Amino acid sequence: MKTLPLCRIVGLGHCLPNAPIGNADLIARYGLQSTPDWIEQRTGITQRYFVQAGQTTSTLAAIAARAALVQAGLEAGQIDAIVVATCTPDYTFPSVATLVQAALGARAGGIALDVNAACSGFIAALSMAQGLFATQPGVQNILVIGAETFSNVLDFTDRSTCVLFGDGAGAVVLQRNPAGEERGVLHIQQGADGTHASLLHSEFGVAQGNIAGTVHMQGAAVFKHAVRQMGDADQAQALLQLSGHSLDDVMWLVPHQANARILEAAATSLGVPMDKVIMTVADHANTSAASIPLALSVAAEAAKLQVGQLVLLQAFGAGFTWGSASLKI
Ligand code: ACO
Image 1 (cartoon, rainbow, N blue to C red):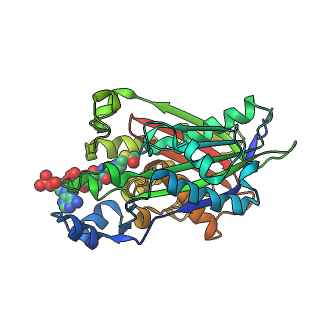
Image 2: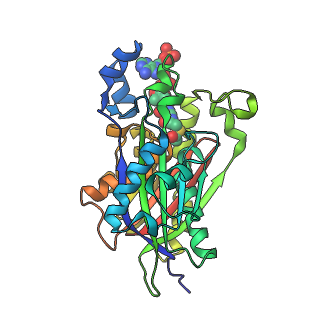
């Protein structure tokens, strides 16, 4: 028997801080031994956004959340839970979600927590939200946010990593479905393989006696794992079959925006044509956990997402961690 989705997306919003920084500007600003063409050809990235002093992950998250609330036609006081996916939080504690709750004036006593699954964090946050709908009958509306200020953990002397990332936030409002509703978050699958932690990591952390490190990555190895995981057609088919769909039914593939070449290879492996792939990496660079909700919000703004369409989210990130979600808009 087909299970009906517990919730659907009723609002989307995003935040990209300040003016975009083009490849030439980035190279000049940090004295990188690189060229705009190298960056664009190897990654598809033409620009990214960075926060300035005083702007934090929670700042971006709250702006994206407010935009999503407006679209949903809801007040902050109607939000029962806030789940933020991030690996660049304002503080070790409290969570970004609690800061967003306070900034929005959302109701005290509601749930607020962060999840960290690096670049696949938004899928983990979505899964957490599904769990809250399933187990807490009083929960009606949940804000799920992906927000990052990756510029804080970039080594600007390492040209092979600092050109790849950007800052931003994307937010969705999920609302509990009325009985019989067929639209919404259909199914989610997640996984992790911690044996690959060293291929993409920051070298410090609180338990190491230092607050944060910078991004270290074995790019070619990460590239292969990302394509294999985000392009796993059997896994995607199995997920879609749970709701009686197949890859042919997918209207939009929204992958984690790591690198245009990774996205092209993953889409090819899934057999999804590029005109059905939402690509924002050129304009936003890799915003880690923010990239999927940012891409969804931008696609909705461009009127690409239409009611009834089937959307497949595919994410991969440090750990390694990964996840997919099927949605009916
Ligand atoms: N400008 C100019 N040259 C550069 C730059 C740069 N910004 N960065 C690296 N190079 C050089 C390298 O030093 C190397 O020089 P060498 O041959 O003299 O040693 C040369 O370019 C080729 O390097 P490769 O690593 O082979 O280049 P590749 O084509 O693999 O591209 C890249 C590198 C873009 C990092 C690629 O491996 C990649 O995209 N990997 C995936 C990384 C990724 O997207 N990570 C995101 C986090 S994970 C995630 O989100 C899923």
